[in-house]
Length: 379
Image (cartoon, rainbow, N blue to C red; front, side, top):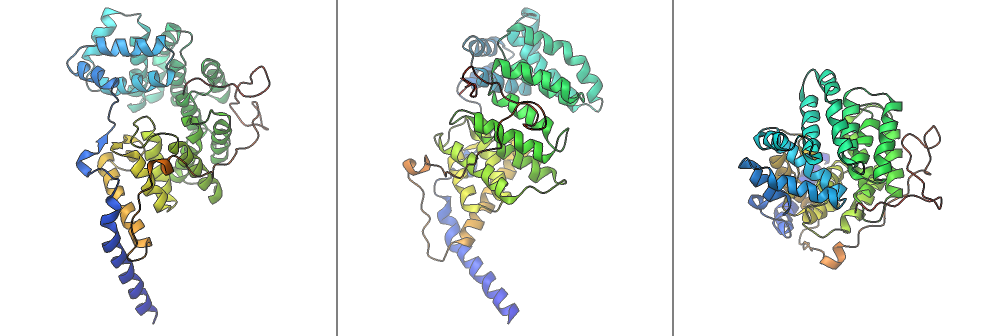
């Protein structure tokens, strides 16, 4: 009897998948339309020019972000240009020769040097040699928080102690209190894989999300803490409701951006991974629809040598799981655009914000003159 019931359930599941899966492709781009790490319309010309050995468009782009204090864009563009320079750096070397003290060239040079140091078996030794480059980049424009994000990544790689890291963190948030990249760097330092714990990681992420402006990607920081917990393993268990709350908050942040917007693509890719691990298949499918054609290397490169292939394979798997959970004859309904913008209200507040020390955890946030949290103009 038991085997008969198991067979019947398997047959029903197969029938549901066969019937429902094709309908669930509605709202998803075809596989050949999905792009990995696609640049936006501002970065694309700079990368194309760099491919021809020309640095002027990259220089103009980063100068514009610096002069207009577009720190989040500046950080992203510097990272993407450094990634390109890892395999083709002729344009960067020519730029450095032409303008050795250009703060924008120094920024890309420092980011590239830190990345190369991280890839070496002699990581600590090589990274320590990079310190002067980061200092030079930071001195290029005293307002710029991006060199301090690089300094935070550098400090993690050189086994910097908590005191030194907190000093760097203070310099970063003084320039931009809610800079996303700096918060990600601090979260990595506090993770169980490095110098903290899952509890510290979640406490910090939830506190930062609570302090962030509505719609800021910093609000999605807890889902990065959830990703770290789900991929690193070990240590005390994190309650399921805390993982779900992190996912709910990221869903709400995702809903504030238009579907197929490249800006939140990495957060949506990361959120999809977490939702899959939590077996929240319907929510994962909705995030795939909102992601559109924009696959990102992170987080898929953490689990596969073929991140694009992994993303596409996961899309198929999510559709199968959703199809198997829907009754035979159900109709896949794609939410209207107006409905997609109203995300769940499942986000939860983090623990009370505090300063440095045991009560508030490490890496507090600056207070404004009225005693509340300082607002960020980054988003």
